Figure 1 (cartoon, rainbow, N blue to C red):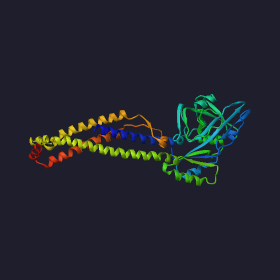
Figure 2 (figure 1 turned 90 degrees about the vertical axis):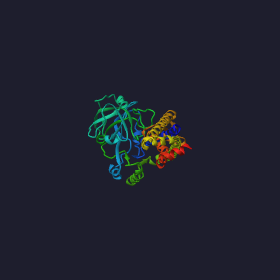
Figure 3 (figure 1 turned 30 degrees about the horizontal axis):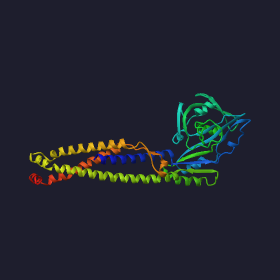
Figure 4 (figure 1 turned 90 degrees about the horizontal axis):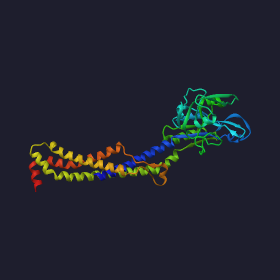
Length: 393
């Protein structure tokens, strides 16, 4: 029984770890998100790299996205205005990426770790949250301010209300100009200044979006959302729509089939192991039938006679299940990689949880019940004298 419990627990630990890997991959890849962005603004990387240049604010992508068209498709629209505060003075740069966002929605898809102060609120005005690399480049602290050139040529002073320790922006723009970065080796923007969408519209002077994310109600709804977006922007060749659902589905297909195979093998193993243990317990109970018959002859009820046997069976099965579970937990590797294409989902971390404990205990109790049932039925159908005489032969 201990060997059977160890095999079943080990197989189920791998299955639970594989399910966790699939859930982790879905959480990281977010196949339910569709990216909508305009053509990259050539003026961003064509600005002079030396000499003196008056401060200006440029859109990273051309502002071609009408938000009403996005809302008509369905799903949750995470609107953005991605801008660049461009300042060149001699041979030095002081450039910052500025993102106009809706705080409540953006925090559902991106990660912001606030080290000091607070994050943006939907009703904020001319305030900003920036990462510590950008704050250091600007020379500002919490409560300080810095100017941003608006489209009308005037400067808007932004007050710093929060400084980020860590930033993981979902689908950031490519990094094409020298600017502070939390990840200097990354080819994508890893730092920046965040303001509310209303503030960025005041800076930019326009309400159209440069890029956006559309979160489908479920991953399976992505194809219909993409089709709706393509119809909505069919007259805008400079608007590009990118989805990950197809790639994610192909990536997890083999993994899901292998997981299903492991599940079937685990179920068959649990069944065979339980039947094998039940057969062993049946032999044990069959050898004790004469003792049960003697107890009945002495006046004990069938229930009282069976209590001792059931207790012994449960103790035996429980000890075997406990030993098997401990062996499985001790011998199972902490992590391992799946072969071939399935390795894209990362390593598998086998884990022991309450469900596995319930299955192992249930298998042990089922083995006791199946092992005891023939003996209990045999004694119930036969007389005490017949039982004693048959066992005595």
